[in-house]
Image (tube, rainbow, N blue to C red; front, side):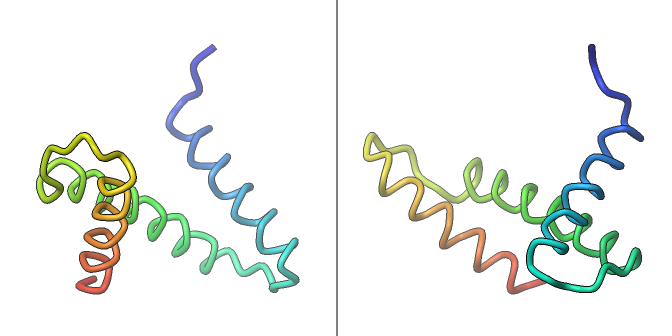
Length: 78
């Protein structure tokens, strides 16, 4: 069964709350939403880095390293 967009959003929020509880952080719903948006931006940045910036290579480890570097660089521009 496929989840609706709202169900996926709420699942993201619940997972963030769970991680915040595990880390002993106070749960602020505004902060949960900010973290959810940041998480989505990171996923988009990784896709951009992978598709546009990382050259085709057979070295999987090098590809993952370049993706991480470019994702970090792009994230710093936010």
